[in-house]
Image (tube, rainbow, N blue to C red):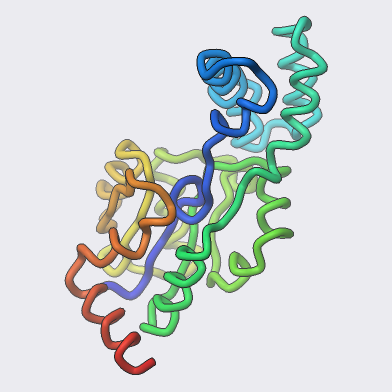
Length: 212
């Protein structure tokens, strides 16, 4: 029986679509995608996610790589954390899941600035029972160790946990540790409907709605 639901942040609880925001800074979709990859797929960014450096470090290293983009990088890197939003349907779903008796946790590949901004801007994240931020633990999904750490830290049993992520490589790694999993590819706003494809969750949520 499922007792614990464990969520990724990006595109599961939190909307993360930088290519859309980047259109404010460049002239074409192609330029936006190029910038997206240049920043979010870079080693400086991934180093910050594993706890090696903050946003200033990321900025300085990217400027060394792309000095001609320094001012553009400055604007993007020190504004982009505010792009991380939680849709109202996600908040509603989390409250229903809590009312249905599920314990809610998170595992996120994230960096200090994004994490601190999300925690400041979104009070609902403080309602989760706990979780792991990669930069604090110096572990990144899909390393099996990060899933095992969650189990150990909170005294959970893998077979009683469902892990939800938008990337199949991450859910596959969680399965190897014993989690049940759900790969959410349709965006954060569809979280509740995706969870309801699992009969026992759908049944519990229906009871919550009925009691409401």
